Length: 258
Image 1 (cartoon, one colour):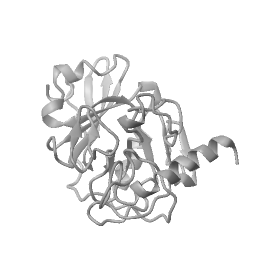
Image 2 (image 1 turned 60 degrees about the vertical axis):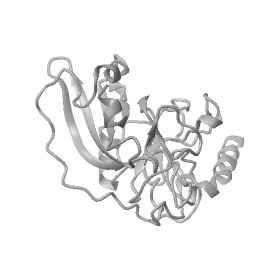
Image 3 (image 1 turned 45 degrees about the vertical axis):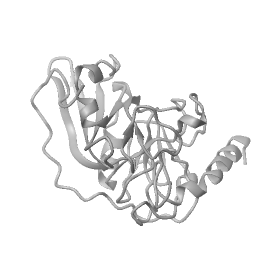
């Protein structure tokens, strides 16, 4: 076993206790994902959040993404032509809506997928995420790397498949966590882009948390991650195009509208 794999395994095992109680930062106490350190365990089927049927893609060209105000829009990099918007129901709410948009030079922004129901952290959102605060970070972050326990479903992002994405235990509402990390996309909050989602490097320091992922929904709040239904997660992975420099814009509706 290489020294890198031993390092990753040690980080994962040190975080096992936290993962047994939720996702992202989740659980009956804290658990997986957002501070999403994967923990080995039996894999089961993650349960997607119940939701209405997805709306038809938006075809009307718009100059600005709906629900995104001028201040937030200004934070989207100029080269980003694909934006995944996760809109929280409230500053302290754990339920969100997610939709994917693509920009065309002639047609403007168009919704290409969603809206889909999603979960975020148990206590909602924060402008200054801290390890264990059970809130999802607000902001605009790159989406460059993916991985999971299961095979690549067809994404163009670099995909790291390995057993360290296994997880067991139960979430904050008693739901099983197995299968939550079958597929993940790393959110580039306090991490090194271009590495596996399991990379423990934290440029802002460990106290600022990390391991924030978009992953398979287990039917309850996360520790800090964003989660989508299993089919929606696969759809997102297949849609993300690194040539379009995709980013996620995430936060409560009131904040994103500014």
